[in-house]
Figure 1 (cartoon, rainbow, N blue to C red):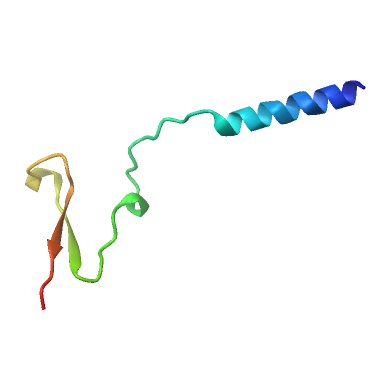
Figure 2 (figure 1 turned 90 degrees about the vertical axis):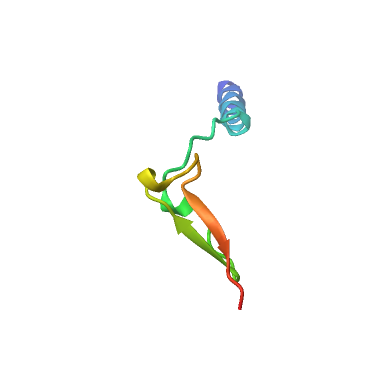
Length: 63
């Protein structure tokens, strides 16, 4: 009977960890950056060239 109670407690603990809210940190990885689309370019600015908090700009490309 102890094994069943321990198993239930362990499963409940594992499931509760999956539902706990997590704080999303700012992602500094390249994989978090937006990707260009068919008719848009993404320009990445160096810190000294930024005019605001964004480190990139989207530019439309017209053919």
